[in-house]
Amino acid sequence: MPGRIEARLKELGIELPKTGEVAGNYVPFVRTGDLLFLAGQLPIWMGERRFAGKLGREFTIEQGQQAARLCGLNLLAFLKAAVGGDLDRVVRCVRLGGFVNSTDDFSEQPQVVNGCSSLMVEVFGDQGRHARTAVGVNVLPFDLAVEVDAIFEVR
Image (cartoon, rainbow, N blue to C red; front, side):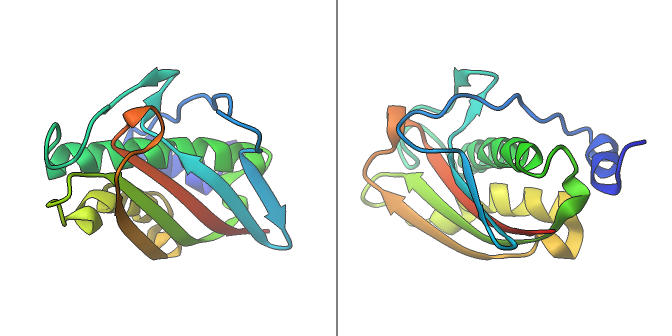
């Protein structure tokens, strides 16, 4: 019988991607106490890198939000793996850290990272509301447009 969050994902028509391999000498998540730290996720769908380029040049704010949402789907996939497949063990999303590959004159990073923030609220309701950073950076791995990391409280 699916849990409450799995039912919510189905209701929203959200499919989570398969978790991929990490790109370096690190682990995709670490739990300490009730906090689960998730490594930064990129806009990759089933192994395919998407949204290569910069906000303010190759991509609009709306496209950046799609990239950030895809980062969020990858975060949820690793979160699900970290809690043994039971997303009902999530107490709340504590914090998101958003990094936006953007031109020097682009200043709408918060709007871009909303793509991931909104996903967390859609899935977890009020428990998806979180603290956040949204910063512009010169480049991200593989020249992808957005990267987002997360901290969740779990039981």
